[in-house]
Length: 99
Image (cartoon, rainbow, N blue to C red; front, side, top):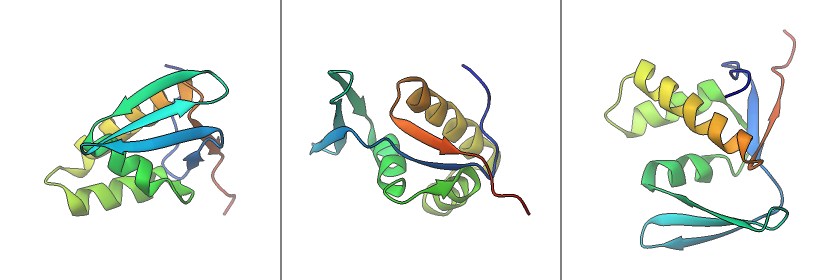
């Protein structure tokens, strides 16, 4: 699945996507690719959070506060989900800022 994302790496939505909420699930269309993608409720929440660029750590912290999930499980699922988005060209990443 490519290189894993760093915990402090900033992620944001790709620019060329159209979205619609249908019965609690998010339907997205990539204009560039001409393809549709469907996200479940948790995926839709992550997508909502990515309306502003944020770190993987920030996503994990928010999701563990909102859902009954351990930090380790949330991190594993967030990294898997973000990796899938990145592979499909739906996510833009930036390296962590230098300290």
